[in-house]
Length: 409
Image (cartoon, rainbow, N blue to C red):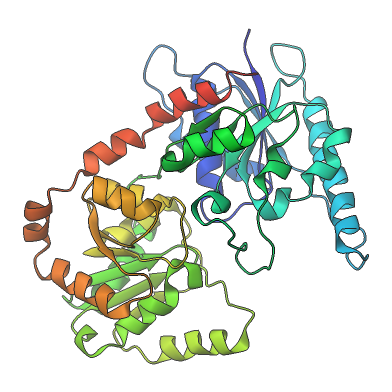
């Protein structure tokens, strides 16, 4: 019998639309009916229509997905103390509201939804889900995006003094399985939680720019660079993404012959001194090109990243997967990452670029100059396995792994 899945995400920035879209397409091609609940259903439907596969006898032509705007639940008692009472109240109303919206859906095949699939599970949003557990009825699974406690035991969640406790989120019988992006910790997570855990590929939208508007930013960057090699840092620009180290590298004496590019939303730190340091660094770099707001489309972002000679992903205390590696493989661009965690493991395995010490601006600049001096020579010597990386992080792999993840339902 055809599975009926409610795909849910109440966030809609950065990678969220991309993940959501690929889950829709994969579920459709697996023959499932999908209720897509998200903040912008019109955008989600348009993106699915643009990227839906049209080849093969089994590929859906119009999709089996119904799109709805998710009903956002606000906190009723933000000042209630202790804080956990307000958080539990929100969790009960929030997750029951999602269930009620799913139960109101009437699929083409009849019957009710078989499972809820949370497209991106964050500790901050699901921390108090255990308080809602007695009031929930529909089995669920999802993608646990940042499994911090397994790579960095005892570490606090970014910006908080709270440690993640995944057993509180994924405990109970309703959670039947779990997806993660980190292939290196699958066995450990499964043993810890006592549930099937599946490593999902971290895909990237590699569509090329097709209009003049989508090429504008890339053209502006090339004009600014004026023939200098370009290294770019893209996405959510914040401390964990190595923003301060990147800006420090741009101001080193040997950086004047390199164009540094920043594009994406800046997540300004609450600490006034840190925010001032970022602003001062931005103003002090004549070799820095910036576009400090969200790139409007994935093709425009791909064109902008394609203008670079080197991509920077030397993140700080970031043990997770990043779609930037798939982007680098799609574009055939060398990538610089920090050592110690998953991204470095992949960079070494697939020979995708250089690995530098964390928060070492000098090492970052040296790696940029070394590659940018002769990108073709670097590629000949390193023999990067970009195609092999894309095979492992492919749509076909997503379908296979998603079928495994949803097998318990």
